Length: 96
Image 1 (spheres, rainbow, N blue to C red):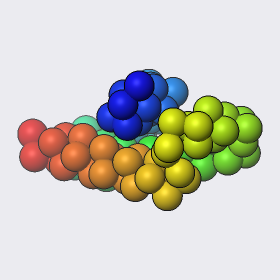
Image 2: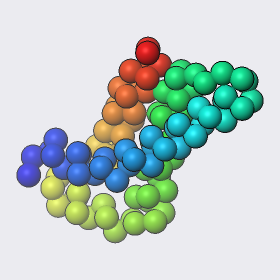
Image 3: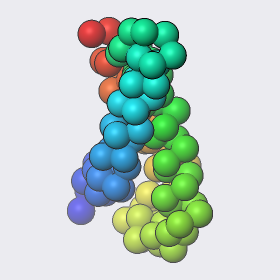
Image 4: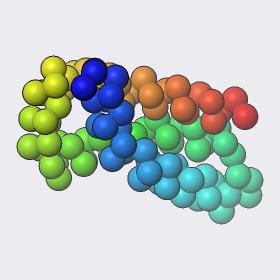
């Protein structure tokens, strides 16, 4: 398995909850400010991705890292992948 495929397997657990919580923050913005903003959803996607990464992989399933360590992916690579993918998807959402 290549490094790219390993990162995709890693990020598969993060994408659905990150989208859900980001959309929820957009609806909270709708309630508070009276308008639904994709800019808020984009920013919250970046932040929620990092928070959920920490919760899922560092608190809830810390032993899951061993699977990725065996593929040559360290914690720093996985954290950077989460940040870069979050920035990419978040910036796409903010530009819509």
